[in-house]
Length: 116
Image 1 (cartoon, rainbow, N blue to C red):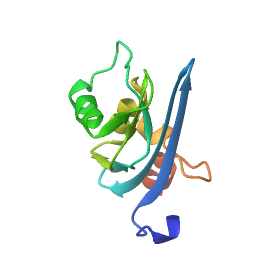
Image 2 (image 1 turned 30 degrees about the horizontal axis):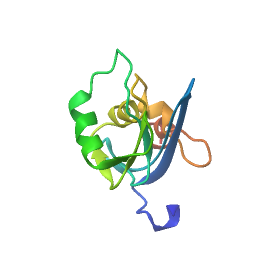
Image 3 (image 1 turned 90 degrees about the vertical axis):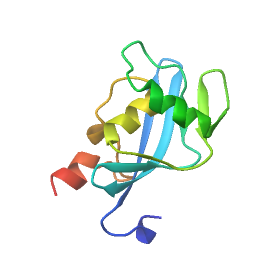
């Protein structure tokens, strides 16, 4: 899939596990901090107490299907305007999206975009 993506974008993924909570998301970095989380990505529906993106989470839930008590699956792509907002909505907890989103080779988004 990486070959079909324009050279200014990057295909990345994020797998998160915390006790019995799991998020598994795939995304394409579009540039200008925009990150398109792809249809089929699985995210956690019960955020931690420190979570602050409830408006965005509600929006994402509206375009998703519930697959378990704690998880949803995106039914269509969703563009976030920050890698960290995307990772936090996917996991329901505080994360640094520049570090947790990675290519299939294990390079962080920070490594391939900011430290280019």
